[in-house]
Image 1 (cartoon, one colour):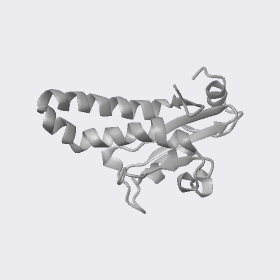
Image 2: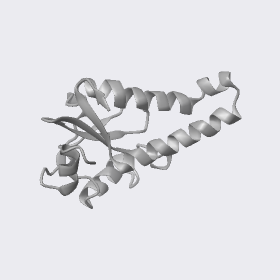
Image 3: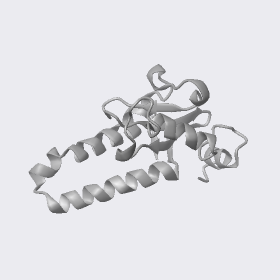
Length: 148
């Protein structure tokens, strides 16, 4: 998908979270009257995620407020309006691609210093090689050449 000149790609970790979210929404839609469904917090959350990954982040994925520090400085995160959730991504300007990597689950909400804090989990995933920002990494090469 192309937005604001960026090709949008989705890592399997992120894609699986979105798939679970869509399944929960589908179930809610069958259980609730339409008026309740559109006001449900999960529906609003899903809309904020979609708006973030389709419109807001592609406007400028290198915004100062998205930047991380330390070992994660090559990655970005979006948090505006997501309360204790975090959406992690990386991007390339040449070629212009955004790769959405990880969205934490409800059992891993933001709580500074907690072992299950989304930043801690994301850092462990980077450390164990699930996510990379190394251009020589085979997965990154697939991403850059559009085969991921």
